[in-house]
Amino acid sequence: MSLHSATVVALVLCLGWTINAQQESLPSPSILADPGLEIPQGHFVKIVCTSPSEYDRFRLEKQGKEIMNKNDLPSQKPAIFQLGPVNEDTAASYQCLYQKGPMWSQRSEILELKVTSEDVTHTSDPVPGVTSVTTLQSYKVWNGVRMALAGVIFLVLGAIIGEVWYNQ
Image (cartoon, rainbow, N blue to C red; front, side, top):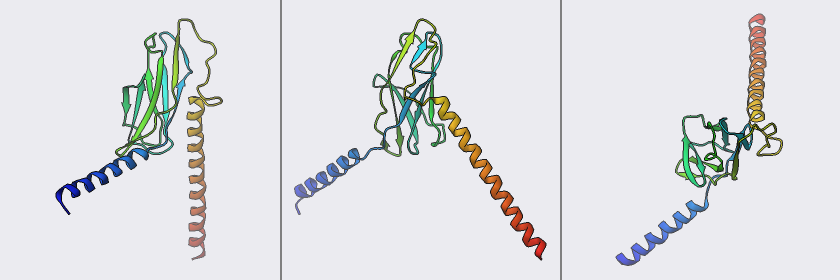
């Protein structure tokens, strides 16, 4: 095999690996705004990004440019980016994506944030029926269920140990 053909084979193998690596990407995260998509000027908003799988780092983009990233959270929790006090410059399109190892996920859906000059009494949910309060409450509920289950297992284990000790 000549040096030229070995170089061509190596190049083809590298290109094939690069193409496969680019085709494989992580699923996109979800994105929502708390308290909603319309924020009164001067108030704060939290942009909540949630990954469908574990991650190493989350990145928030505004109009396609990175503005913040987080990698200090356990990878099972949503990344929360706080913006504010908001003004007309805050009104924009936001997306988030996450990194796991060397791979980046697809970008989330676009979240259009609007800033109003008057107080907003009704805010629309970014996802119908789902708000970040609901998401945070579901974590609390599941943690309560886990703690209750651990308590039941502890009681059953204690009863078994007590029964064995009593029978001896």
